[in-house]
Length: 285
Image (cartoon, rainbow, N blue to C red):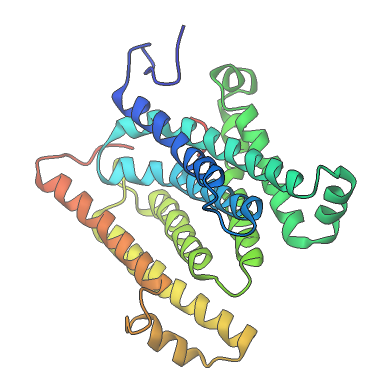
């Protein structure tokens, strides 16, 4: 019998076992916080938000595996991509189940809310998309659908990630710090895939391009945040941009995106400098 922590040859994979265990930790943390009364005055609502947040985090981790395994030349990372993607689906189902519980299991009210509240409609569409990807993530479904059709289906994850960020952004209201970071990360992740297609060399993107992508994603994040505050609150674009890179108001989303992009570039450079070779680069694409 092959377990989730076995590699393709049926042997124990320390990487897969470690990731498998780690995927349970956010849910365990949330349940322990609930049991100990540490989730505030509305514990179910807080649990809904925390589990939803971890859904998006796991989805973005799954999307980041392909660039990371190519940049840091760690091909074994692909072994955990499917596992992380399926975990994202499990978390979104828990998120949805908690929401139903918070509505006293009134399914008619839940359905009405999904229809009439656009951010809930967006979230439900993303949930259905993740369900389709999880249901077709097995080797058997790959064979049944055929590699090309299966790959086209799993590219839906890119649209699902956008829906997840929009859902998170809309329900966050005034506190858009983390949704903006996710938007910046999405720009980086999609930018990497475009660079891989047009300037890729031996299945990877040259490090100077990776560094430039980090800077470009940070600039676009800053511009997007400035435009949002200008349109929503009338704040001058120049004022927001000045704050974004001054650090006087703390770590702004653009700085976080820039730091992440440069850290990945540095990791790739260190790996190459240690004697690594640039090598060619199933589940969630």
